[in-house]
Figure 1 (tube, helix red, strand yellow):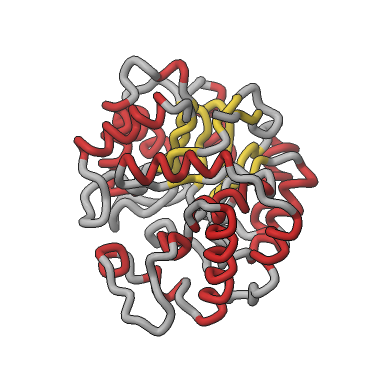
Figure 2 (tube, rainbow, N blue to C red):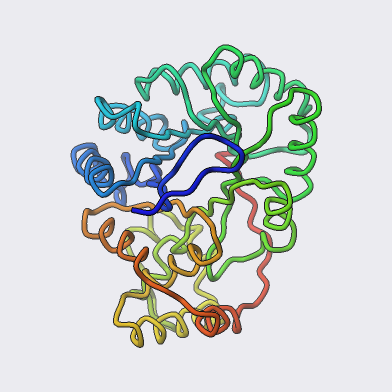
Length: 320
């Protein structure tokens, strides 16, 4: 396993982060028993960074991870997210909600501290100073070590970073946003800002919810358990120009004797990003880890990118 230091922290993380969205109650997810097997196998492979969120299966993902990491906690980096909408009475960015969200996450994860705590989204009508004060208090109380931002636009990230640094001396150390070979809109603002400020960029949905696995075909129905339970997937991908990018990825995978998923992940690793992988089976985990051994040259990278067409911005809502 390869490791990298996150931002300006003392955290040395595996180059792949195991995401917790795949652990829970939906048909396409791994159930508790299989999720725990996946998590422990990932740890055996050297993955030491596990990410989740309080809204994933309404807390079930955190509970599963809490059980799985028993005995491993001090060797792991655990991140989770708050401010997402759990239900109609439990959501928001204010002091009451965030404190409850943090404390509930700690209980479910069975830990005393969260290594990186993300705001799961940012709304433009929020007073960031109030939210940052709450987060700062939790840092001072040793419940949070570092801050992260997820589903932030470029201008939101810049404002949040500036206020957190100047008012509370707390840097944002990681950004977890939607990015993959068929959705690259963060190149227009977020990624350049992260590079300038030394913020780790950690893309979620690195395989485009399975689209980049190569199992879907152009001009076919392409229904699956995943598309049925996650209908936004078909709205995000499956355009002709997405298949144009996928075709090149499949070609390169054949040339190198690997799977399309390996090329899709190697593409992100080549850029120096820290992808969040979501897996529902042990064999999928192994496929993802094999991507670390794939070397892409500049020509490969150009071929992956040459047919990309800019997309409409997809804003994460975190349940809102």
